Length: 142
Image 1 (cartoon, one colour):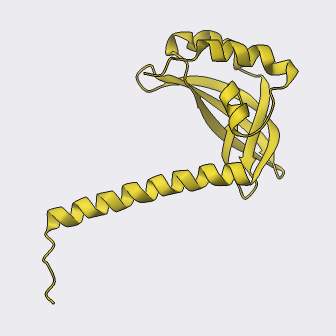
Image 2 (cartoon, rainbow, N blue to C red):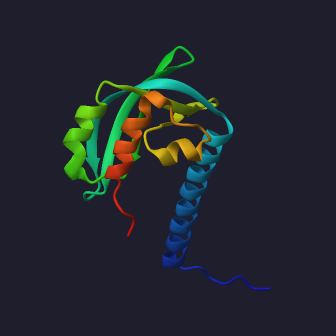
């Protein structure tokens, strides 16, 4: 049986497909591990920033796990027109953070109702009004 020759272009396309597949697999595995090995702690919002083309706001935070300080970033789908009031509301405040007990760099700050539901937690009474406010600013999905 003879081998089919693979030209340089085909090899490049296959390599790109393999790399994309690996990246997707890693992201899926990290989400699974965060759900499977989750622990909760409290994190503090350090700053907010805009991301994308008006597609949302990054929430930068820090938290302590295993006697070490970690930094994290959670994206919330709120129009960047609200970035200033959201920054004012969240900056310096404490919120629940879940992290992967096997890799604390895999983490998520719980801010939106869907975050609490996704990871099986109820919204604390003390954060309910903030969560409701953030949910009211959520961009409609197209």
